[in-house]
Amino acid sequence: MGAGDDWEGKAVRVGALHEIAGHSGESLATIAQAVLPSAAAYTFVMSRQLIRLLGLVLIVVASSGCAAGVPSVAEPAAPVKLDVIFVATDLEIVNAMLTLASVTRDDVVYDLGCGDGRIVIAAAKEFGARGVGVDLDPQRIREAQANAVRAGVADRVAFRVQDVFDTDTQPATVVTLFLSPELNARLRPKLTSQLKPGTRIVSHRYGIGDWVPERTETLSVRGTRNHIFLWRVP
Image 1 (cartoon, one colour):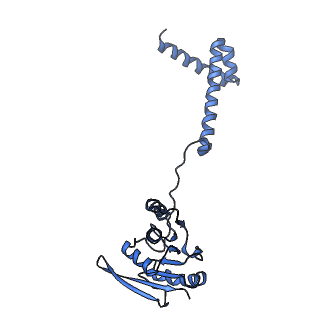
Image 2 (image 1 turned 90 degrees about the vertical axis):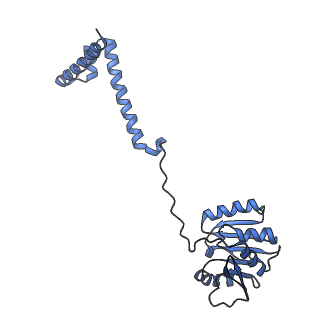
Image 3 (image 1 turned 120 degrees about the horizontal axis):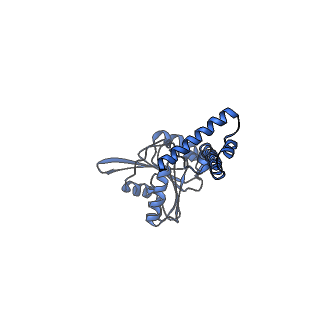
């Protein structure tokens, strides 16, 4: 008997077993044990049990999903809603802002909306001050921290993912801003109530509502006139 005849014979026997079971009402396992030789009956019964077991395993895996170790695709994080877009302040303007505020090694400079951290880093590296930068954008804070390490001032500065309106500015002796006219005006009550008398506030480009600055400087950088304003908390 060839291989094809052997499989054909098995198929006929299995079909016959189904037919007998259908007429008799007995289970296939019972019919197999009665009709087939003992070894064949054992193989038949074990094969059906194995098929049932595999079916149960597949059901459990399908229903458990991630719990069974199937990795899920994480949804992308929602983009951070920013009040202003990041525009890097030219380093010449950064230096002019810190010079106008007369920053020294005794100062603590807070930059509200710090971006890549360049103002706080310059305050530490060029003027010897300590500093804190806050920004809503986690990517900018990561850049600022990396820039501080490269500049060798990571031990003198700190950066936080934080809303400027939630920031405790009381430790500051100098506050720097490059935000917008609206945000500057909204910040005025917070700054004047939290900051100690004599604290200097420096803003690039924008004033603070109707608060008249103590000094104003104008410098031309890359063909653009830039205004820098200084206030002192009364």
